[in-house]
Length: 139
Image (cartoon, rainbow, N blue to C red; front, side, top):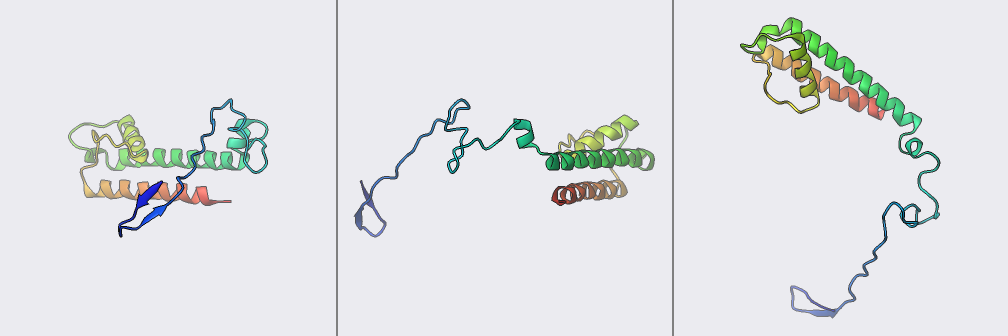
């Protein structure tokens, strides 16, 4: 196959070889590693995908996130209750706000109006993500 370069030179090149593998879950080649020919996940697939080490980290992250969401909800309810606009907010509104904010969904129907409430929420969001990063890097 002939390809033309920008400078006008012609060169005969072989086209790259295209290899198509059957990667369906029932395929024998899809379940084997190329080097050993054995299955990459031994035993129970859940155990291979999420070992005890990663499961422990996941539990710590979920526990830390739950504590941060509850702490933020309680503080914003008692300290910044009147800072969320004209609507009279309940604790469930503040819990909803914390969950949607920490999960980065942020619908915008509830938002703090004062600088103090915004600063508190910003700091707690930063601390939550910093905590998750620290937990995920622990050995």
